[in-house]
Length: 215
Image (cartoon, rainbow, N blue to C red):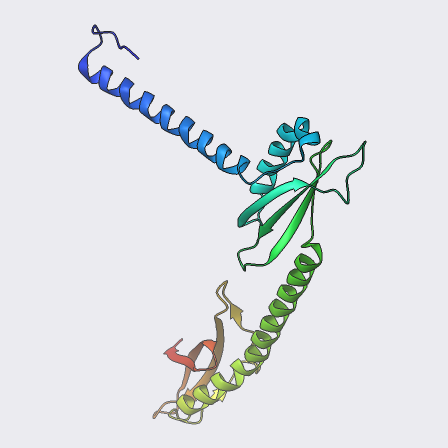
């Protein structure tokens, strides 16, 4: 392509750059299509259906489970003189081989992974429920751990009297951190009443941090 010499050098350079990008993208698309076509095959008597086979292949290539596109052809067992069905082979990310059939008229995809997908979803749901059960079981122990730490620290005070109904209702953060607040009173050396607030923070069974301050 000949650029006008009247254009400023900077504009000429930008124009060349845009042309190169466009040519590169076009070449890449052509190369991808050519690569896809090389993995497709139809009997000679069905060659008129090849454009539709290529359309179906492009849809299969974009399928979320088709990590590796292997090949595509006519499904002789599912096709008839009036209804054409294509069949493609793919591999999942886990290297599981499966097939996808595509109706020529509607380009509707149907894969052999449906039962596997359902099973994967069920197993995922069961894993999530088990993780939730474990978390809830751990959380039931949170107060017991914090209570031990609190009692140890409160024992350092003179005749501590708990004012909060135990166990206290915790504040729960979005990250799953539990915070308990416990009010208690003690007597000073002069027999005056002193009020305190203990804040107990816990997010795992490993440790509960208890901080005590005056009110």
